Amino acid sequence: MKPISTNKIINAHKIAKIWFSPLISLILAGLVVLALFPAASYASNQSSRVRAIINVKIVPVIGQPLESGSIIIKDGLIADLGSNLSIPPEAKVIDAKGLTAYPGMIDGYSSLGLVEISGVAATVDNRETGRINPQVKAIEALRYDSMHIPIARANGIVAALVAPSGGLIAGQSTLIKLSGWTNRQMAIKESFAMVVELPQIRSGRRSFRGFGGQQPEVTTEKALDELRELFHQARMYEKRRQAARNNLLLPLPEFDETSHFLLPVVKGELPVIFSVHGDQDIIQLIKFVKEEKIKAIFYGVEQGFKVAREIKEAGIPCLIGSLYGLPPVWEDGYDSLFLNPVILNQAGVKIAFSSSSSSSAKDLPYHAAKAAAFGLDRTEALKAVTIYPAEIFGVDDLMGSLEPGKLANIVLANGDLLELGTKIEKVFIEGQEIDLSNRYTELLEKFQKREQEKQL
Image (tube, rainbow, N blue to C red; front, side, top):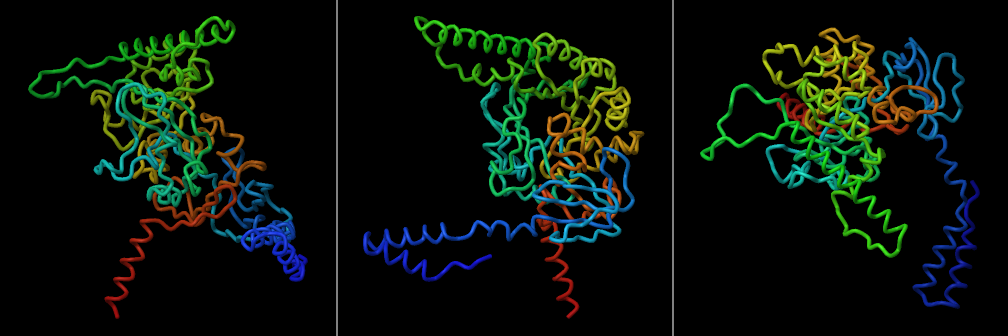
């Protein structure tokens, strides 16, 4: 790279000083320096943009594992992978002997960046007041500096669906990568899907509701009737707007915020994630989705195993809720939550696991491991935290597996990714190695230091 001539800078400054004020002359001289600075400075960083991970076991998820091979990363993408590859001379080489390369995991449903400490209201920003909030966007409340994000990615999670909660229409979810300096930098899809929350499974045991007596519970049937009316109003709103555009004599309808933000849903442009739980509610919802012609994804589906065939026939993918809870109905058996994804998968339903949390987002692989312990094929369990959520979210051309042309979202582990004792050694997001330090490692180092001081 040719150095900039000092004489050129001095001459530029002299010319500017003659014709302009001192302040402007300094600005213009600075601009001249920038103009003269060679564009080759970008090229000087090319070597840092090319990496080669060598001597690594590769589990691409799509295709057979490779016992020992290399992965070439260039400009954030997987340029090539396989055995006996020619390593570019400018590449930064990472010898990963004894490690296994996996695609980074994707959390199917979480509150990462929205909930910091659930017991402290000031740090909880995952819901809005009111029941109907299609205008609410999770991206606006996303905390890019949440302490849970580095903890999650240190365990191999590189992306997550972040969803609002509360009411009937909770708002718009966001698909994010777990790196970036701002919430916008983290966004993969700012508005991925509308979130609709249907009633939980009602227990047979009635609960005390205070001195006012028991309040009538909203049933799934009533909730769907309300949704049906809202969707109808949105369609009518759009018809009136279109009529006014076609005929200047007709006035535009008064702005309707709810209908406006539901338009992408009723047009089939924006999917809807339905939080649904009981088997009969799932049957009602399948009928509703067909009638309204909505792009649907089911979340929760604790009793999905009872209607797995119907879900498969409807072609609706399912995001499995947290497996850390209890069965909603004890009659289903203590193991119903663990068997649910097994039966759905065996029926041919596309499933993806989720943490359904922020503080427990790091535990995503262990949800898949629990299902594997109860009969889910381990290959399918791994796919349900990698390629299957990518396919459900429509980003499988970017992530979810290790293939040439995809983003270099790579996890290097010293063992099976779904095992509790496995240590994550390195994580790459879009080809950049991520610092794995977090609140946990900070505390570990703090107390290790204390023990060392005791021994002195």
